Length: 332
Image (cartoon, rainbow, N blue to C red; front, side, top):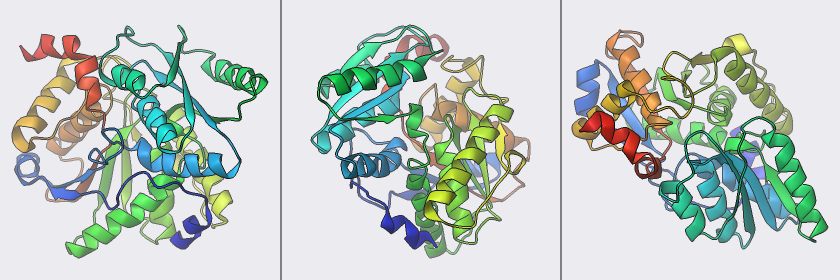
């Protein structure tokens, strides 16, 4: 049933498949057969998981005659940076409505937003940003533009399709290695990555693979409800017989480390360990919390000794430079 994705509009933004590499030293340390899915090495503006979602979101926007992408994210947002990049590749404009936490400094992703020529507007509160996004869309319509509004993180049923496709890619790569993963783990934010993986594995008859989201901010109840809703709505678009409930979703919320966007010591230690064992670079807001959660769970034996696990590196390296002062207080 995965072929149904081919019926959707899509705008190519990266070369697939992305690498899948064995993290032998780190895996041995943690007692797992660990593989890293390198979605951080895509060619579009330093890559990341949002690129997969944007292929379908931009394709949908172009099919509807839109000329402007409008989205929101934090000051350090990977999604905002990649939306700006995707817009440029497609000959469109990008408007970014950016919010706290942290301070807005033109470093890291914010610097790249500026280089890409995105129209950046700062919104001082995270509450009410959805309404502000709609208002911005109406403002652009009055100017004669045709905006396409993308929710934070690309977390829409269309955005889900990117990781439904990635599920097939992961299975094919693991099959070549003669391995079927028991767990696929990733840093979980707005939910579309996890929703896509769950939908894709179910469509492929591989729903015995457990997709584990390590939350970077949301509580597990809110996160699982959001993921289930995205899976079910995406399944309706594809007309496939897949339906899930929140209780079917696994989101671990004990590694948020003080809250969304808060840089903490445990995350930085996990980032340092991954860098020194495997030369992998994770960021302190998203992937760093994901790898911290994964490492701690693996050391506790929660995946089972010797289990085959894929950790998806969803990108975010520019945040290392944007939040460098907070990082260095734990590194030096």
